[in-house]
Length: 323
Image (cartoon, rainbow, N blue to C red; front, top):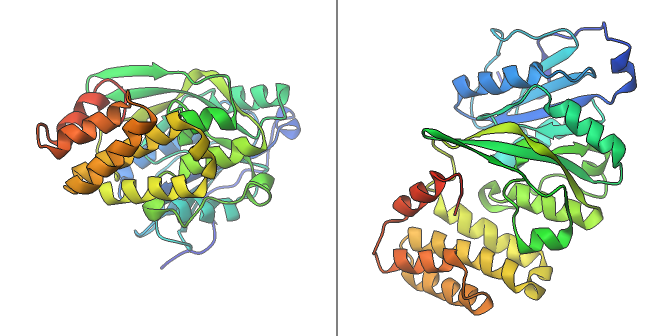
């Protein structure tokens, strides 16, 4: 039976004195069809050394709820499950969790990623020293097949930085945000995004309009690229999502580098779908803005069938990068 509100497995009432002076954190994990990886993510979240309260809400999207009653919940932690009651997909799943949260701070963790034990403690400490930041992130460790790569973002990133670059080192599984902002000026995750693709980038653009994004310069989240992604072959969602973001933020028009990057990604997605005419049109737009935009050249290579798209994606991913 579908659960429309959090069904808590365990709630401890005893807290340390330190916890009384720290904001509580609700972690939202939207999941679908990854029970083994989900349990690894859940264990890492509940095992944080953060002395404040942590509530984890696991939102099951387009799948039956797993009770997770085999998971050990430490003292001072809560674990709840619910169904996605909003738009199917990642954006609706995250918003379901945000609206069901009880704490002041919201964090995201994908069901196939894992946090380092000190992740929340170091982020909250950093935010206490720089409270004007609108979002706090951290570095990541990307696990590919046989290799691991540490990626560290800039300590501070502004709106102009995110127009120029997605700054992929700032991963959604590192996000820490005030719930009041998500329910207020910043707004919830955009559920109009096709297939929820680029919802994290859209949120970073909106957040950095209000203030800078602060990052802890340590790899505090393990990101698994040694598994399949729901977006790996869904090129239509990639193309439509990025086209939507380009239209949503007219500021891209004054940023040739950022426009070229987005247009190059759209071109590559169109080429991967076999729409060679659209791929070449988007590639021309990208190269007009930036002749060195490699995604556009990659799209042209795919469009003339010199290499299959999966080969290029695999080669780039093996180096801890993405197209």
